[in-house]
Amino acid sequence: MSLFEDIGGIITGIWTTWKHIFRRPVTIQYPEEKRQPAPRYRARIILTRDPDGGERCVACHLCSAACPVDCISMQAGERENGRRYATWFRINFSRCIFCGLCAEACPTMAIQMTPDYEICQRDIMNLLYEKEDLLVDHCGKEPDYNFYHHAGIGVSQPRGAGAGEQRPVDVRGLMP
Ligand code: SF4
Ligand code: SF4
Image (tube, rainbow, N blue to C red):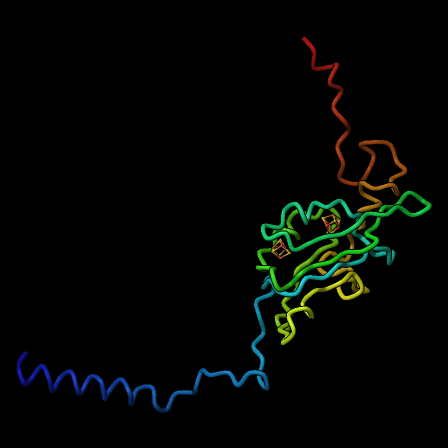
């Protein structure tokens, strides 16, 4: 390597340093300063309610079946009106990898991901969330969806008469 190449390398290095020295720093002083995560960021999980205020979760176990790390467990119960619910519902956040598969699998939109990433704990046992820690008093991202009026026991109209619903196919009419 020639002397001129050495000097050129040094000058390039100094120029790069000077180029950045007066720029605004990109460091964020967390926790005093907080970055706004993307709207679809996946962090703390919640159990939402339908617009009538009822619990959306029908304890169908689909979320726990979809969970790749088996961190969701629950027990199903049934109210006097036939409506199913989870008598207890538990998520072990020390195992959760925030993949969002539980929310994708949920037919009632009960389980939803939120951008709340501040759930670190010193005691790992505090990452065990029970139903009372998960259940919120709002509908989350689906403010109008009411499973019971779409497909649950609250459906009173005949099949195919619901909003946006197609008439059932007469399979006998398909016979040759
Ligand atoms: S986000 Fe993924 S790992 Fe966490 S509870 Fe849901 S399915 Fe399981
Ligand atoms: S959260 Fe959704 S998928 Fe999980 S048990 Fe309740 S209704 Fe089923």
